[in-house]
Image (cartoon, rainbow over all chains, first blue to last red):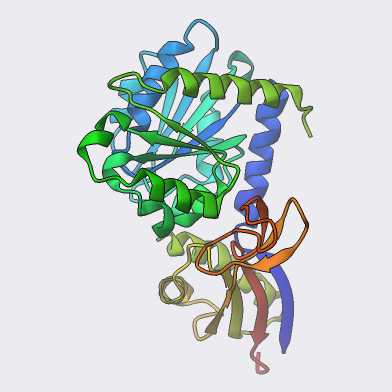
Length: 221
Length: 115
């Protein structure tokens, strides 16, 4: 006997993500999901971002790694932080984030950053209830990562080209990077940033502030 | 490489359908979009491993790949996306929604006639 169905395998995840999104919206918490390879500079950028907005926003971080709480320890001086260890898992899913939210009283926060597990593939397919997906690529990784791992750049609202101070020293083809990116996502914004030189940080902070303002103006659905 | 967690999400749905009919599973069909990040052989291996000792232990796994399609936000044209180039053939701009190609769907369960 044949049973025809249409069942989304990620239905449970997506349902949980919808619940997270509703809770965050109800509490007025803006939630960016940061995705990149390991070592592209997510945590360093977050350290600077948390410091920059320290007087302006009440901030929290959920950070995912396979093991250790090193990142949470780095970020803890600046924000309430919960480390998720995936024990080998390659991405965060909505169930993990939902559990992590038990550690927060959402009404006491304005922004919740999710620092995903360093991986350009698996995190992209999982809705976590975030408001915006931000992809980071460091110039040392090479511009070919755009076409090799297309889905992240396709779905990102913003691409941060990190370690931009190293551009003169590495064979990163900027024109190729932009051409490939435009073929995937013609409307994505791109900001060059360097946590070392400070280049682009103001533009990044401004993007975040504007995006949050847009979000706040949108009624919860 | 998260096929194990995908297989772990898939198996209970299959087993529930089998249990409703009181039979074992002969075959299942899954549609995986080209951008879903699913390696068919890995999904099959993970499913096989998890299904041991269940009613789906002997099920054949058919994985159909779904090509990527997009719809232009500017002119509304729906077009096939080759080599992840999302440029609208008319507008020459990649300002489009992905219509197909990121899904992972269970579409069919074939149950053994003998219960």
